[in-house]
Length: 135
Length: 374
Image (cartoon, rainbow over all chains, first blue to last red; front, side, top):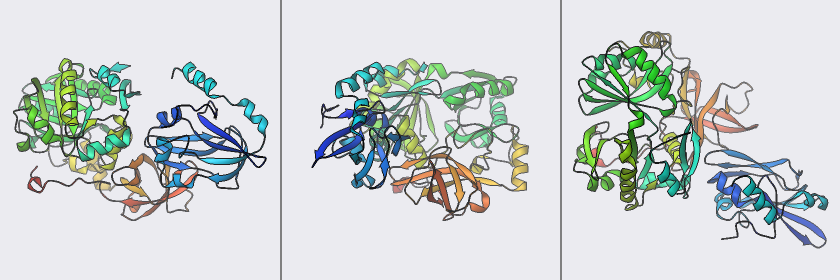
């Protein structure tokens, strides 16, 4: 099982995470939802994601997650063009519950503006935020 | 927020608690809703339903008093038998759905929804207190549901009452389970065989622990409101406040079988008789999603994929985990209630195809020897 809130990720107050990587000079961001989000959602039964080639904008809705009880919007932590979608999630949405930081990733972006990273939280700040919220 | 006698037990189990109509109730335990759903379909689930209301009617005119309030025919009840019914307003709209238990010729018990207890009590007092004693015993009464194919097998060692001989909707008044005085009814809200067990509120925690132990022995567990909802929806049992309310009648809701228009008089009878003669305009229909999407309460329903005008709204919707489908209920014009009728549901701005289906989304296999016995 992966860590509750891995140190190498960026986080948002909407409970998404982003993992940055540099591939041949291009900055890529892989995006998913946090362990906290998963615990709140309960069993995920459907994940709706954008298609490859679409663009998403920071803080805007890029998809939704349906759990047994409710539907929740997904907010993009960063802006960029979608270059990969975790298509196995359409048949196996439970990956989001089981492994939100690895198998449960959702989309990968070609990062538009690296300055947007300044608005994100690191693992310590995100956990402090959760504690503030009484979680 | 109000707490049931089992509140501390839920916290100890690590339940996720929610506000359910003013009650702090477990929505799920750490295993999650799907796991609890499966446990109830395959073994047994244990449910805290202490929040439900228990209103007693006592006196020589108790039967007459209750009969005025409900649409089903109480004349068919003997001691130790219960029936499902609705209570209607003069308009024919549904005040609540409930179970009536006959404890004796002069003693009836009604079990009503928690969310409607206050208005039910006021209504029952207003219409019955001149005929008999009406007592709300909800606060003193504990109620635990023990539901699943393994319920009888797991519960029998805890009681001397022969559970196998108890037909559906029959009950043992003042029996004993694990040393606790309890009444055991073969009723439930999951689409499975099972029991609802009444006890004194102060005995509920001890009984809960013993029932959980018995459940654990066959792979069962505590089940929260989340799975209670998926279980009842999958079995196509209506939920008051979603599928039934004061603007819907039992005839529209597919509950005509609990409305006995040729029997004794009751509140709402005239309106229901008139509606039956005039013919229904809409009916509560079940549908399955044929496209990829989950209908939720309130989502608009359309005829076919293209039409622009909504013909109804989803009253209940969500996954039916055992059936492996996404399903829903909603009131549709009677012309569209045929199985196979194509529909679409507006799932947050996206039209998703659906299809009318008849009957429950899931039906349990009955043990052959028990078939048709109740």
